[in-house]
Length: 307
Image 1 (spheres, rainbow, N blue to C red):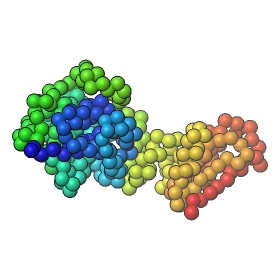
Image 2: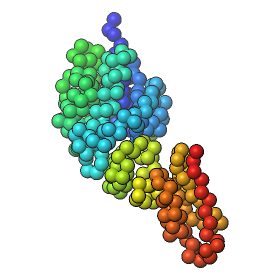
Image 3: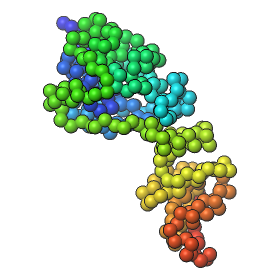
Image 4: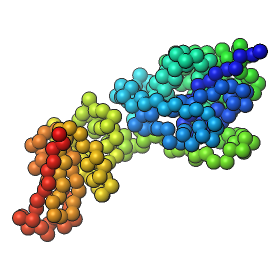
């Protein structure tokens, strides 16, 4: 009796990764999905997809592990601040560690040859496989016939004839396959992670320049509010009530929160030098719609230092 192949599949929740799982299930593989959380991707779509597919999903937080990749990627950045090759290699390396520790036969992804010009050309695919130490164990079911056979294929654990040869950026073949499988709901292709967006990348570069030892929690606040740097401090001002609430909840030990007292204005979060409290108060007034109409005795602030 032939051994039942055990596959660990990276599941983003997008159509390609859904189809990769489906192709392996069709071959009778025992499939478990894994989703890696960074500041820029998480399991929300993968959770929905795993339920639809009927496979177990494990979530692995690699936010801290991702920082060195973001700060100094071995293979450089893409169009903005996106270290796509290094990011994918990190996830696959982590998947490989699980594979070896728990007796999986292979790691699979929904990658499509040539779909992403920066990270899915032949050289990039080979680099990722090598850096992740998965040579021979990384299966890409949607494009497998265009790539070298994996060990699982060579040993007959996976039928290569039932794998595909999809390439390029068109999704027509994937959509047709989804229809064939009766998969009606799946996310539209995303426009890329936040790191590919120049405005976000510009803000993140500012954080990297002013606070080289930044944390994942610092990155969480990059898209929130107005950021002002100087004198060893960071000041963030909310642009609306939602952002004010986020800043209040994000405050950690040593941070200072400043609230307008008796007038409408932004909440300010100060990290660093307490001497910047006065500057933060000035900024609150600058962005308060009716501050110019206030008398001096009406300008009051509530200041809280997080213990």
